[in-house]
Image (cartoon, rainbow, N blue to C red):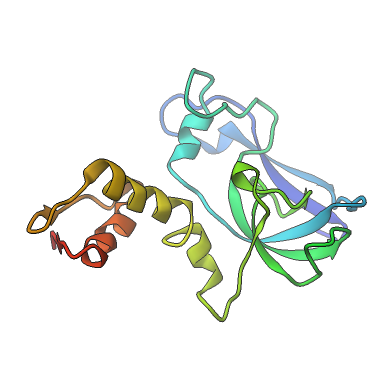
Length: 180
């Protein structure tokens, strides 16, 4: 692979049960050039989350399915390689929706229509933005607080699937006991 080539994983077929290697295809493309108002990012860490399996199916869901031939969706920690956007500089580390690819263009807008979140490695390891300090952690914390509503004296338990590892840490911050 040369410096001008990017790689991406596209959905090649709808998985029947457990996804197989043949359900995906590795493609090489040119690294894009950012236009005015855009930035080019290079993925450092890609989050692989349980919700992605549902996006591989073509059925009604809370999230739009990935079309066959499209890059698999996903959030990543990425480094800004080039910027023509006033809010970002070369070298910034951001959380961006890049999909399963090595390089992506961004207009500076991330999930939920907000600006890409800049990360400071001095505050927390950048990988935490894809876990406990990111979407999985927020989902676990929100589910615990809004849906679970634990009360003083109750014990909170759960499995390690679907972000509950993050939820398992939350009860002590709420003054509740945690199931060991």
